[in-house]
Length: 420
Image: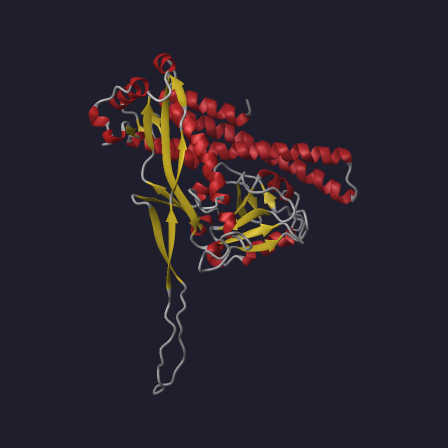
């Protein structure tokens, strides 16, 4: 079990014991120790890399040491980030008597819902008006539990703008601000000037589903929390599918992926403002030019730079960790305190596992204000239909969620393309 898993396991144990303040203290203490170790490891990494650069010829032992240090730094930074999320969740949850998501425990509800999970035996008052479908809509408590966990594990959700709609989709108006003006004398004629145009952006929802199954016997005899079990299974799969779609989805029963709006992508001409601008890394198959990263930062308009972040996968982070600026300072810096992420050129780095690796022609990193760039549209509610009939003796929990997405403003993002 890795450090992150052990920490989360300890968190779960303390939460069950109802010790939120002790829990926050334990998490913070563990996080502070990890941050100290992280900064020590990065100091050793910098010294070893400087030694490698001075030698001008790669030493096998040094390269191996750097590889090990890089992996350890990545693990520790991930652990620190996980601690920060756990502390934030604890503050949201309050006194430690929560059972799922961000809601307080309701013994009457919990007992009734567990009865429904095992036998379908639930009071009609807890039904949300779905009798004609032969099942039950997910209660509000269940809905919030799953959405909350998605936010913890889906980086784009964490940073994009998320809206909830009760309709089939979402339409947003944008304007080209194409208004004219001019200087005139006191008696000079005032001809008509340009008038701004409006363009609708429509984001439709696709449907994602999961259908985990368990025997009736297991449901009868299980001593585990069935709510947490089902929520965890659905959360993992929904999050994985969403991450892929938010980046590369083709819009067919799924969101339009952000990468499809980059110059040369399938949706490059879809937005009236144009495509997301791509800038070259300066090398045909590498991200090794620190000046190009600086150019990427300052090519973004200042209005968006204040909230801008780097998005890249772990392997790409490992590569840019070796880069320095013109004064010999490393561009990548680790966390120095809980809640503060790693930075690159002074901007937070967000790990986005589904972004492509560094390879010729790939978009290896994104830089910009994700909240201004990408819109996630959730159709209200997650629906769970309990089906004990179709596949006896198994009981199916058919879970669906409708979600859409697309770029709302391509000007707020830049893409780093691996090219000379």
